[in-house]
Image (cartoon, rainbow, N blue to C red; front, side):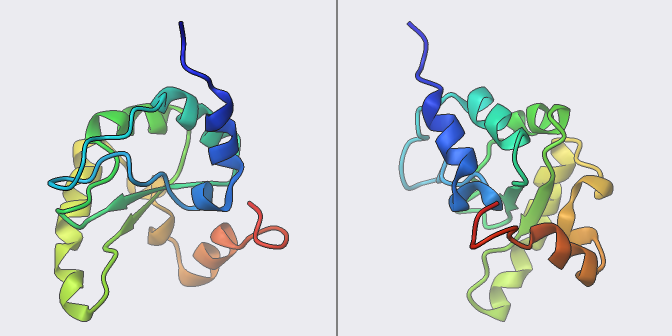
Length: 130
């Protein structure tokens, strides 16, 4: 029996998925969420969403082996540090390494765009909806 795919569509349609798929894995904290990742990626590909590659070594939410599947679906990425202080900016290299490991190109990373273009790409279209 297959997994229910309706949740993937709801996830991609939600405000939550507008910028990222998160909490698939949290290192040293809990097991990965058992979800149909291809279905989530398919749903996200049909939206304006992007996947955040979180640079924090305690996070690294999306396992690198799923990056090629996201790239095949033309889902853009954002490399983030999830920093709560300037000291937290030092982990950026880990996000860059994860992106490189997955073959992500600069042109696939939204936050490599000039600020005005990035702002336009992530701006909600209506009342907080993607």
